[in-house]
Amino acid sequence: MDNGFEGLPAVAAGAVAAPGVLAILGASGDLTKRLLLPALYNLACDGLLPDDFAVVGMARKEMTSADFRAAQREEIKRFHTRRSFDGDAWDWLESRLHYSAGEFSDPAAYARLRDSIAEVAQGGAAAGNTLLYLAIAPEFFATVNEHLDAAGFTRLPGRRRIIVEKPFGKDLASATALNRALLAHWQEEEIYRIDHYLGKETVQNLFAFRLANPLFAPLWNADHVDHVQISATETVGVETRGEYYDKTGVVRDMLQNHLLQMLAYVCMEPPASLDPDAVRDAKARLLESVRIPTAEAVQAECVRGQYGPGRKADGSPAVGYREEPNVAPASATETYAALTLHIDNDRWRGMPVYLRSGKNLWKRGTEIVVQFKAGSGTLAGEGNLLVFHIQPHQGVEIRVLAKRPGPAFELQRAGMRFDYADTFEASRGTGYEVLLYAALNGDPTLFSRTDFVEAGWRIMQPVLDAWKKAPPDGFPNYPAGSWGPQVASALLARSGRRWHEFLPREVLARNPLFAAAPPVLLNTLVLALRPLAVPAGTAVVHAGDHDHRLFVVCHGRLEALAPDGAVLGALTDGDCFGEMALLLDQPRSATVRAVTPCDLLVLDGPDYGRILADFPAAEEEFRHLAAQRR
Ligand code: BG6
Image 1: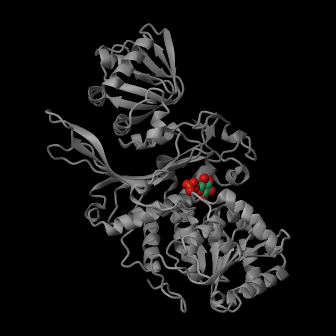
Image 2: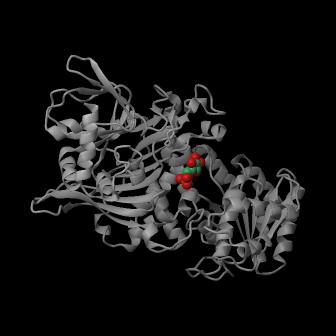
Image 3: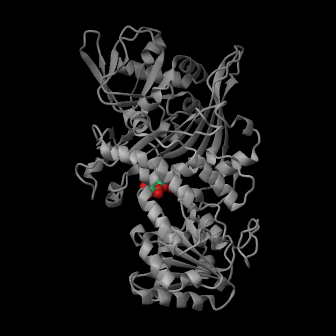
C-alpha cells in the first residue's frame, strides 16, 4: 500500500510502524492513561513500534520525565488490556516517554515542546515524522493551533500531523468554524479526526465483509433489502459526565459520529481502490446522499427519550437523568433517540434506515441488522436477517429458516454465525492501537475528513433544531433499565416493522424461568422469542380468548384481572404468563393488563409446542410454574 508520505516506506501487514515522535497535548488526562498508553503498550508487546519512536507528554502539571514515567508505570498496571503484563515491553516503551510541562496559553511552552521533540528525535529517523495528539477539550483547539503554528510546528521539517478527538463541533456552524480554524494552519491531509468506532475490529470488518464477499453484492440494494437498523444501546447512564452530556445529548454524542460512520460503511458504494481518499470519498458521498430531514420529517420520523428512575441492568436502583450530578433539574436533553433516514441514491431509494441509541437501557449492544425482503415462493417465510454484532458480542450472523429434523415438514428459525472468539486468536485491545499505528504510518483511511464531518452535521442539524424549538413531551419517558421509550417501538410499528432485539444467552439466563436451562434450549429460545413493547393500560391477553402465546416480563408491571374486573395478582420482571392456556389448551382465564409500560418477550404457540416437545424438562418447569400460580 502506498501511504502517500514521501520518505516513509509503504507498510506491509504486520510491519513495524514508521519511526516518529508522538506529542500528547493534555497528557495528564484520562485519555492518556486509559487508552493511549495502553494502546501503545499493546503495539510494543506485538513488536509493532519502531526503535526510533518516542512520546512527549505535555500538560499544565509541573513534572519531570522521570515523574511522568513513574506515574504511567502505575497507571498501566490498572489499564492495560492484556491477560498478563509484559514487563520488558513496558520497560521498552517507558524508556521512550518524555514530558514537557507548560500552560496551553503560554507561547514559551510550545517552544519548549518543539525543542523536546527535536531532542528526543536526535536527528534520527523519528525526526521526520511528528504527530501532535490534542487530548484536550475542544474549546481549546483553535487557540492551541494558533500557538502551534506560531511556534513553527506547521513548518517542522519532514511530515507532521495533528490528531483531534471528538466532539468535533456541537452543531454544523461550530464544526464548520472548527474546520476552518484547523485548515488555516494545516493541510487537510495533515488533520486526523478520530472516531473511536473506526478503531473497532468489527466496524472495520463491515468494509471487509462487503468488499471481500461477492455473495452479498447483488443483494445490496433496495430491491432486496427491506430496511437497515443500526442500534447502539448502553447500560451505563451519564455517570460523572453530566455537565458535558447535558449540553450534548445522544444525537451529538453517538448518532452524528459513531452511528453515521457505521451507516457509511454499510451503505456506501464500493470504492474503486483501497486508496485512503477513494474510501473516504465513498463514505462522504454516501452521507451527502442522505436526505436532509425537514421539520415535518423530524416530527413524523424521529423520536427522543430521557430516562427516569429505574433499575440498572444488574438490578441495582438507578436515579433518573434529571437527578444525575450536574444535570439541570428540568433538563430537556435526550438520552435516547431513534431516527428514520432515507438515502436518495439509485441503490437505496425507497429503503429506510433506522438509527437508535440510548443510555441506561436493559442491555449493552451495538448491532447492525440488514433485514432482507420476504420472498414470495412456495416456502417464502419472513425475510432473512444479516446481523453484524459489533459489541460486546463480536461476529456476523445470518438468520435463516431450516427444516426441522423429524418426519413432518416443518420450518424453524436457525442462525448461521461466525464468532470472533471462535475464529481469531487476537489479544483484546483498546481500539486505539490501529488508529495510532495508522497515524504513525500516515494512513488517514480510518480518520474523518472535513466533508464527512460536515455532511454528518447537515443530516443531524434539522433534528437538533426541531427538538430545540419544540420542548419534549412527557420527559422522562422511559425507566432506567428498560428497552427505551414506547415512541421508539411505535415509530417502526407504523410501517409494520419492529426493532430486532438480540438476546444474549446471559441476558435470558437472568430470568429465573430460564436460569437452569441448558445452552441448546437457550439458543433455541434466543431465536424464537420476539420482543413486544406495550404501553401502560394495554390488555396483553383477554379472558376467554384462545390464544397460544407465552409472555416473559423483562421489565414493567402487569395485573391479572378476573372477568368481573377483580385484580387476581401482579406480574413483574422475571415473571411469565400464558403458559397455562398453552399447556392445558384452555381459553385464557384472566385478562392481563400492563400497569406501567412493559417490555415483554413473546413465545408464539408453534415455537412453544416445538420447544416443549424437544425439551421435556422445560415442559416440567412450565407445568411446575403453572401449578404454583394456580
Ligand atoms: C463516546 C460517548 O463517544 O462513546 C459516550 O461520548 C459513549 O457517551 C461511548 O458511552 C460509547 O463507546 P463504546 O465504545 O463503549 O461503544
